Image (tube, rainbow, N blue to C red; front, side, top):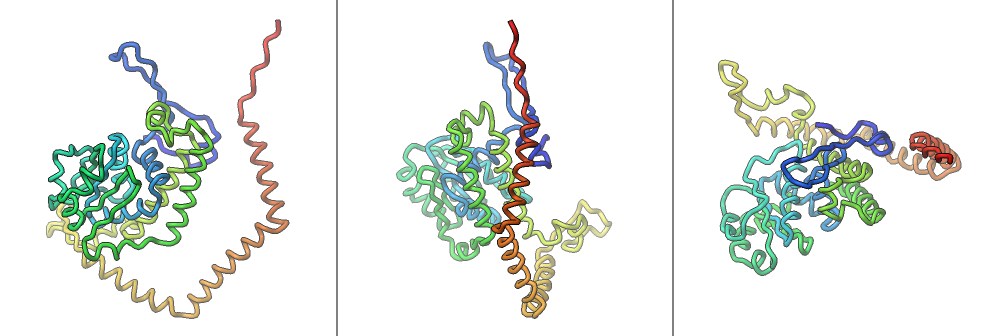
Length: 335
């Protein structure tokens, strides 16, 4: 699978590669030409749709509910939006993988399913969402038992009324600030180009996103994944860390492994007790003040004459390099 190049500059300003093919079984069909990496409906178009229209906070609430294995029902009038947003939610909880029921297209006639005891991610496309879904007694019962409702028509998230769940859905201030900044970037790119595929599903399927758009959404996915990795402790750092949090078969058969959650939590609690003691020391207080002073010094440097000179020099060199990479116009033919 071809991914985003490590060099962001290369991805945006370098040579763009395309996947091209034809489908001979379809008569009179034209060639298919898509940019590489290939467009991802969930992690690109649907993610942009949720961020621009609903916002980063509801998105994070949905993902945290999924980590708690609580059900999400996505409803709306457009089938492609509903199914794509279901796919986005499942793809955005990396490094975890959704291990329960997933039905991006659930017929409204099977609405009884939402009261099943198994966690699920499901989508229902229906014309009158408020009458058919939101006010239905089955929906209200499911929401009292752990299900949340994401309404794409009103761009609202109705969080489950299950006791105790709401208290666990606090959001990290830095994460909120970062996602809001990236959302502003997505909105800027969508408004900058009137024909942007960020707002047009058919245009996305036909030609994908621009390098700038795909890179911004790739950054958002990275921010989310780095946030969720912190819940994994040293499991995300050391390859063999899993061995200390479970029991292996007596015959040392690693295929027979039983995870013990208490062992993992005990290690976290031990580190927590030590961290609490460190936080109350003068050493840690000095570290916080040093971090604050570094930020103030950087701000002063960037706003001063030296900062303006450095920024101007970098911008000039960047523009020169950009011009060198642009293809030159072919010489006009002489008569």
